[in-house]
Image (cartoon, rainbow, N blue to C red; front, side, top):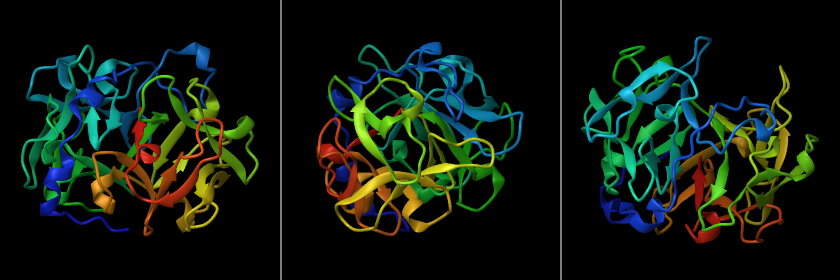
Length: 308
C-alpha cells in the first residue's frame, strides 16, 4: 500500500515507555547476509546502510555520545555501537538505550533539509519512522532519510525521491516478537533453503536461519549466495496464508513494509510487518514452534515485532 501522512493519528503514536525501556540495544559485529556461525558474535542490532558499492556507509551517532541533539551522520560501516539500531513501536532506538534509558532517532523538523539527531524517546511523531521499498520515511512530514551531505556529514530528511542518497538497506537484522523472555524470532524451518520452506516462530538463537536483510521492500534470508537470493514470501495475499522462503523474484507477495500499526489502520503502538498493497500482516498466533502466517492487520501482540 502507499502510506500517506495522517494528522489524526498522533494519539496512536504514544508508545508504551515501560515496554520500550525493557529492550536493551545489543551491539555486535555485522553478520553478513549468509550469517557466520552465531557463536562468533554476541547478540546484535541491525544497521542502516546506504545501498551502494564498497566502501559501505551507515547511519551512525556522532562521537558515540547520548546527549539529546547529537547528530546522526553517515559514516563508514563498522561494528561499533553507534551504528546499531532497534526498530520498536515505530521508533529507531540507538546507542545509549540501556538501564531504563531510551534514545531514539529524531527529525528536528517537518520540512526538507531538517537535520537528524538522537534524543530521549518520547513517542512523538518526529521520532516515528517506517520502511517502504528503499526508503526510511519519517512520519512527520512524510519525508525520507537522506545522506545527500555525504560521508561524515549529518543526515537530513528530504522529499522522497528515487535518489541513491535515500536508498537504504537494513542489514544484519533479526525480527523478534515484542514480548518478555524467552524471546522468539522469525526462523527458517530446519535451516533449509528450498522454495516453500516454512518460516516459523522459534526461540531466538542468533543462527543463520534467523538473519535477514531488508532491501527494496524485500526481506532476504537464508540461502542467499552470490546470484542466488531467497526472500520472505507469502503463499498468498489472503488471511491464513503461510509465510515461507522462496527465490527472490520481485513478486508482490515478497514486498513488505515495516511500519507502526497505526499506518495500516490498526490500533496501538506496535510495529508490524505488512504485505504491501494488502491489509494482512505477519502473525505468530500459532505460538513458538508454529509456522508464521499472514492475517488481517490488527496490531495485536502476535503481530507486534521488533527489528533488532
